[in-house]
Image (tube, rainbow, N blue to C red):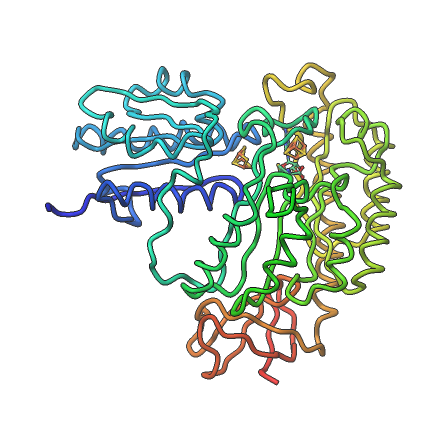
Length: 439
Ligand code: SAH
Ligand code: SF4
Ligand code: F3S
């Protein structure tokens, strides 16, 4: 055996890409690759890309441009593009950036080792199929390396909802759920390796309907089964769609001890007219009623959301409706974006909003969200929260972890080790985190 080859992966986009990057690194481990933190000494560079907004997609080309020198100096260096830009623009990437050796879509990366073996020396490989086989069954199981206390676990992929602005149904394909037994095996394996908190992932995770021993399981069934795994302390899931928030899942938020009181539930807009044009098939009113039912089951739950401003045809009144929805809900966290025109989606053909108007709306919306977020964070002062410690803080003797509500919490205390949980009394609220003392 020669020296191990080095693999540098850079990940963009959502948590599902983070999970996929881990799995790709493991798959390439079988080809003798070990991870490295820098492209400079890598034998292979892999960009795991995101296509959700124009800026995200354009980043790929500028990033590739930066590797030109490396490739010129070391022609053996292999450069690969994976993820959603690979799926959407595979052929164009090959054309625009001839130094790219391989392009692999999110549904075919189990074929990566074989593609890697084929690529190089001027031979190129492209695979953006949606194959019938399940990549997760073919991928080798994760090696038994020790893990940090938190992990992602993809349980569902793809989307059948076709919101008028969104590329995900095209880049990730139709909704597919992994069988429950596979998910539970992977979860047990993660726990054995030190994981204490698992976040179940899916583009529409609450539409999960994986095969179980007695018919299809809902996400709630899966959460309850995970709840029985000894050593697992916390369960989270993301991202949910309002239309798939079933009664059993709402009830689980009230009753399942390990399910954390945090829910990311994107709404996008508070205007019924715009929601209809977005093809969201829920109204502002139905969303607010849903939040009320969730809060009835779990009063302290922290609600997070996603918003798009400047969607085609959005008027001042539509935007005010969104601001009113935000006021009605009171968000603990939110991600907001200026609408980005995505070629091939229905909304791309419609009357676009003046970019300056959209910028102004985004500023106002973000100011309101920041205010709500901050008030909810500040209201933690004086309360006891449970913190799962994840890493040392920036200052000497400091440890940082997350509360049940996903707030970062730091303490200055020698007792907590990485992976341990303690009750912490919150004493202050800073710009990005809370501080406190062990109880
Ligand atoms: N499946 C999830 C979100 C997937 S994309 C859901 O349905 O909620 C993550 C977020 O990106 C979306 O919630 C939306 O707010 C934003 N987004 C998607 N397409 C966009 C576009 N064309 N322009 C701006 N933001 C977009
Ligand atoms: Fe995109 Fe809508 Fe599907 Fe979410 S539900 S991934 S926003 S199409
Ligand atoms: Fe981006 Fe693909 Fe995720 S487009 S947000 S990486 S599903």
